[in-house]
Length: 198
Image 1 (tube, helix red, strand yellow):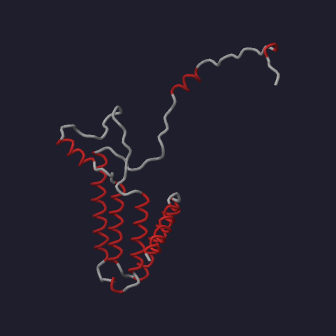
Image 2: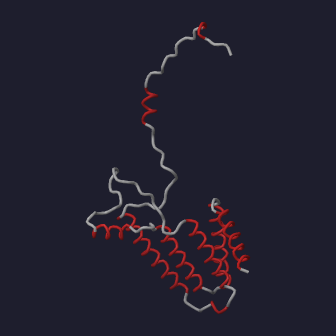
C-alpha cells in the first residue's frame, strides 16, 4: 500500500516537474479556472463568501510572491544589535545579492490552482452558500488590497529591492568598442615562396 502511494506521489511530482518550463500556458490555465469560478458565481448568484475567501488567499499568495525570503527589516534590526549597520548593498562597491522570493513562482502557481479548484468545488455544496451582502465584501477586499499593496510598495522603496527582473543583465564590453575604434591592421601581402602545399 505504501509503495503504491509513494509511486503515485513520484508520478505526480514528475508531472509537476514537467510543467515548470511552461510559464505562459500554466498562468493561462489559472486565468481560465478563475474565469470559470467567476462565471459560476455570476450565474448561481451566491457563494460570495467562497469568492471573498479565495480573493483574500490569492492576495496573501501575491504578497508572499513579492516579498523577499529574508526580510531586510529583520536583518536591519539584527545588524543594529551587532553594530554592523544594514547588510543590503547601498552603493555599487558592495556585494550584489539577488532577489530571492519568499514564495517561488511555481509554488505561487500551484497554490493558486489548488485554491481555485477548491473554491470551484465548494460551489457545488449549498452549505457554503452563506447569505451575505456582497458589495460590503467587495469594499473590504479593495480596502485591504490597497492598504496591503501600499505597505508592500513602501517596504520595497525603503529597502531598495525590485521583485521583478527582465532576464540576465548584459554589460557592454568596453575593450571591443576601443579596439573597433582603432585603425584596422593591414595584412602583409602573401609571399609565394613561403606557402606550404596541402
